[in-house]
Image (cartoon, rainbow, N blue to C red):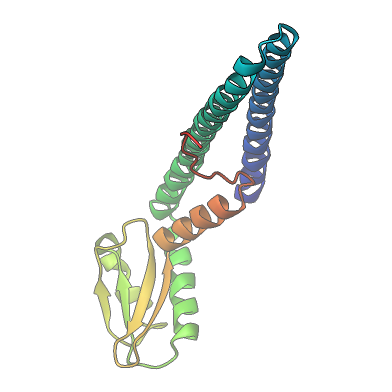
Length: 202
């Protein structure tokens, strides 16, 4: 299964779990509302007019607090679930990227990254950055990159980056940046939108 298919399957799985959890929460809320209505009806039938008004105020306050707490707890559980599932997927992706960086195919991949950077920054003033582990590839990249080639320990998964200090331009083709962008996209499009909800009076 390719990466896109895995992410699609993961998204569908997480969305289904979220919908099930939200449906359960709505059932709990409905049960709370029905219980409150039953209590109010019983008090009204007993003729406790004065107590009814007080009970309604108190029941409404308690119901709002209970529903708010239940909603906050549910959303917190969904958030933890999403984070756990997301981390699992991207830990696996990170392991595959590490395997790529250690494979015989990596040099060809790295050359492709450098070509894209050269197309983005065609001038000769830009400096190419490789991770320290890839310094041995520098001489083999001279046919693509005629400018400065240096090492940069700020990225560790592989790929390359380039910067033109004179013009203040930087291009990033590192595996680290690709994984981070994929994670951000997934969080934004996972189909689970969570908001912090605080329980309290009101």
